[in-house]
Amino acid sequence: MVFSWKGKAVKFTLIIALFLSSAVLLINAVIVTSGRKNIVQAGSFIGAHTAIVPGAYVYPDGRLCDMLADRVSTAVDLYIQGKVEKILLTGDHGRSSYDEVNSMRKYAEARGVPTRDIFMDHAGFSTYDSMYRAREVFRVNSAVIVTQDFHLPRAVYTARRLGLQAVGISADRYVYAGTEIYHLREIPARVKAFLQITAGSKPRFLGPAISITGDGRDTRDEITATAAPENSQLINRKGRTIRERISPPTGFTRAGAADGSFGQYLRDLPLKPPGSKVKYYNGSVKPGDVYQAVVDLDVGDRDLQQCADAVIRLRAEYLYGKGLYDRIHFNFTSGFKADYATWRRGNRIEVEGNNACWVERTGPSGDYGSFRQYLDMVFAYAGTLSLAGEMKNVPLVDMRIGDVFLKGENPGHCVIVVDMAENRNTGEKLFMLAQSYMPAQDIHILKNPRNEEISPWYPLNFGERLSTPEWSFNKSQLVRFQD
Image 1 (cartoon, one colour):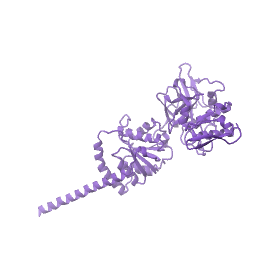
Image 2 (cartoon, rainbow, N blue to C red):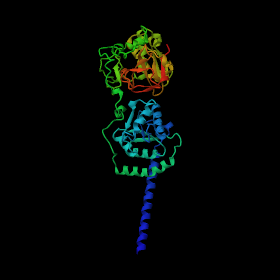
Image 3 (cartoon, rainbow, N blue to C red):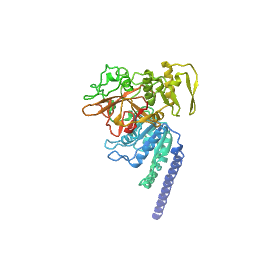
Image 4 (cartoon, helix red, strand yellow):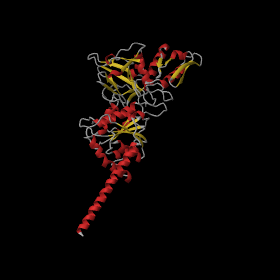
């Protein structure tokens, strides 16, 4: 009887073990098969609104482990290619001594992604939590998940089961040490994910909604210099131009600018009253405290005057005001030369695909309304790529007012030097920057996020990279109009 009971117990245990093993294998097969159906190659990937980047180990000094660096780099590549609009970095920041997401953010920013397009989920403690919070907290709908091959099936399966329209792209750039272990760890992790989805488990933390369509700076958990109070020693609130409103710091005097020069024009740009907000072309207010003052120049009522367009606008306005009409010319991204002199004679530009040509449409006209129509046409078909081809690189030490920091890629960005100052005793130089951005918005004077004591001035010896509130540039990206 005893032996019979023991035999039954062993048999029962074996049946349970076989059942559990079969269940584990089945669950893994389902997740891998389903997940892999929605993994795409980077080259064939059309696009999604958001790239979701799960966290991984970060060293005590803030360096990303190789796998995590490759994840963020792949997401940055997708952003630069225009295939995603936002990046959601999700990882472990459950204690002050360990912070995956801010390390990931700094890595992405250093590679040119504007802070406003980087969202951080500080409570992405697991893949399940990350995907659940992406949907519920960040209101993500269309997403591409960027992680390693071994992780992709579970991440994509989880996201899609939770209601995200998600695909996956591999971040593998070489064979990582310990890959076999990671594959083995996925077996129980997939079972756990399946059970969490089936049970409708909640993540450890939820919190208020932060829409991914908003401003990524709202997810920052640190006090930044861009939110610093106004430097009252440098600001004359009664001033109506850049020159009148913003003084150089103690010991500095404004650099020379010849009468009637482009530099003098920029320095004397009119400003809106203190406290004015930057507005988009549709009248809504730009979020964030990244600017010192707003230039009093219309933005138009269409989404046209963005970053490169603002530089084009200021250059063209100066030349138009001086009557130098033959010098007003800009290239479209296609290479077509759109010169204002031809426009003034009554010709207009027809565009079909990548081809553009002049056609005679009306009589000669040099009035300002016609000039603005010309600029809108240029804004529609020019950009940082075309502008880069029209400008020449200049050494940083030779900077002058009117020069531009330009990253001529897609997407790219640019900011223009609108004033300079110098300390005659030490030889130190400072400069001031203005920009527009996306969507089309008022041109504004940028604050210095790294040094509030001299903001909105920037030091010429800023190091290898110039960090502005919404973009960063290499010191080699300073360019100048050739005529």
